[in-house]
Length: 498
Image 1 (cartoon, helix red, strand yellow):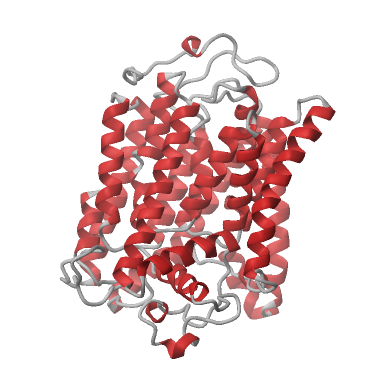
Image 2: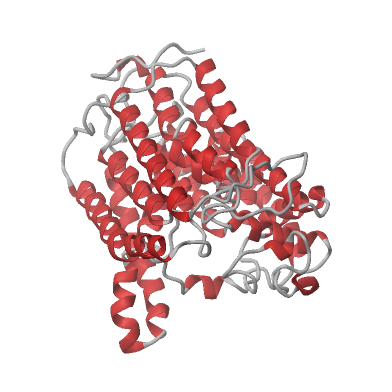
């Protein structure tokens, strides 16, 4: 965390977009302008230490009290929110769209590079190659961006600070939801601390990186936590999640999966109330955002990022068949993702969860399966996208999936160091892009193969080495027998509860 904070505090670099003249209020930096080589070495070191931290936590658990965890998480979030974001320039795109929307114009039609001649202090700060790209985000996300831009009052640093505060609060909200869902079992609770609350890789990507995904995850996990007993707030939250990023509609399907065991009249009534609550968010939001809200989705659906295995395919076929390959890759990836979801769901029925309520447990399994199926097979993936799978993963008991998804996240984090497309020396660009193009796709493909093989295994052993949380005996429907105290474990105790 200190390595990451140090890179951010150093100011404008290949990892940190500059925020202009210093101000007395955050975001603060020292304007040291370190070299691209130095920040790359520091970020690789931070990623390595972060990955080892999660691995160590998975093997032995964290022997901490809830108060210690709260102090560590809040302190880290507070530190990160007063520093400039690093790892990409996405936050500047968010705020550019928010600035346009706050002024009463349409960010789905007008691009930031054109708006006000590209001279606006906030919208004009957008970085290459996105200056002339209109918004691809949902109307709820745009509303949040507009609110932050309005509060920033035209100051880039202040606007960025407010955005980071929002992301930090969303991260802590997810941590709180996971903690409440696992509070009945110290070991399950400790696992949530390891995989989310004190996960350096996620803290670096979502809080210090200032990515919108954490806000959508907060809405989605909140909906799952409430869906079994409180359909109205759950519906409002899932509507907000879908209205932020449309891919979070997968969590709506997960909620329906968890409720499927109810008698039909009760299921229809409960799901209907949630649907109406979701529409109460989505309909006004889309009326406000207008008819061009999803104009960019088709173009975005044709993109293939450098670090995914699909890039190995397009690199070979693009020269032969041209851009039509991109029109085929998307549907094929969706089909394969659906197959993987089915395989994961079938296997996960026998995996217990840390959620005490059976319906919430079923929702967590389905949310993980749907998110993992999409993320592993989508042609376009970036490290912060993985946040949607790590939140439900924190509610499952240990399996080989822990190591596989940790490897995937670690590789993606490495692949997008230092983060910006400008400011790199020629040598740094050759090394980092070489890894992203030539090494990362094969490693990500290996992760997919491991996950598929795991789904095909026929065993009742869910251990993935020594772990802070282990599974117990299972009924046919996948729920554990007895109380949470009956879980078998070979680990160090996780510490006291509240």
